[in-house]
Image (cartoon, one colour):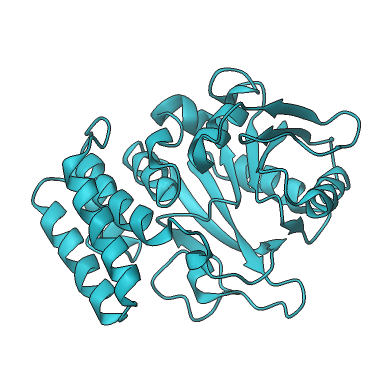
Length: 290
């Protein structure tokens, strides 16, 4: 199976980007074709053979990745698998691409693989980087209902079936939107602890827009994808969880501003998942109310 990789960058981490590209070039098996997308910024120097695209404006994470997908032909069809990697990450092993080929070849229903993210200094995987509710053991691989945006592999037929990432989300929850659409179309998602991307431990709130985007996109996610009776349940649970976490006053103000924005602005096309998909999500351990 042909493997490609999409990396988006703001051009502000040239050393980390070069190290990541070196780790991709060292992958076993056939070479991985790489496209680096400068998301509203110039692309730093890259090795010969790496394609680059420089966008005149920042399209956000999903928008930038969608441009990278289309660089491999409509819906990425020039390759069978696309890796999506954060520009400050690093593939820990030389066999990650080969493991991806083996996984997708062995299971024709497998649509997405989520890698394990580990801190390069400590080897620790943050709980939030295990895409399931039972996240205490990051070394346990399993079927899951979502995936990590900057450390994953997607069978390109998934994009042909359900479309790309939601451009309008800009940042936050775009992976879950794609995951729910993929599951609704019959694809499966695996979390693989043996496929590792090294990435420094960070807090998501380091992004200034974090609280507003998380809240707005949570509402959009529900409005776009959930059967109508589940929308208030899902959002009510997340409102309660947010309050229980006792965010700062400024964070809570931004969160409620985003929550309001999610209801008052267009969320894009609404395609509610089938009830059998709700049951599938429930059997996989994460009913779509949390």
